[in-house]
Length: 193
Image (cartoon, rainbow, N blue to C red):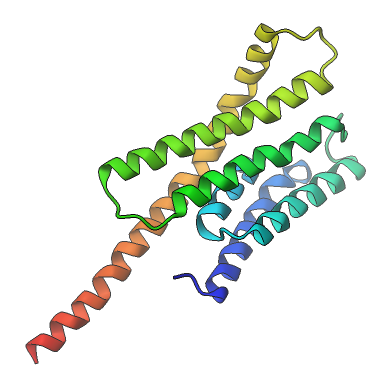
């Protein structure tokens, strides 16, 4: 039911979040947690189209490229491992598309959507951490080393993911409930007259 204008507003909001958090290298130590993973997931939920996915991965890549080229990300550089961030984003986008399918809101559906959300961020982080561990770290590679590396970053990724996803999904749910009540109220008034 989202109109083109609504989707543009949503995309603009997500763009502002990405600009504010992905470019945290330029800001003070008091910044919001990174939102790129959350925006990819939420983009799948609310925007759905592949063109929006491409827009957001290009936006994030542009910001990362600028921060690194301007020296704002100390010690950071683009390596082959960076390319694996795009499939990680894809996992999140597809999970968002799955969750965004219009189904009746039941307790079971809410539980399933929560599990899909949680699993998608874990898989996305495994792809991102795995690629960085294998392609970027200098230490000898083994499974326990990967698990240690993954656990180092997974907590932060899950925390920042839900920092953004939970309030936005809650606001969306409340807005849908309110929107559903308004027409019913008008219909009740028409019946009384």
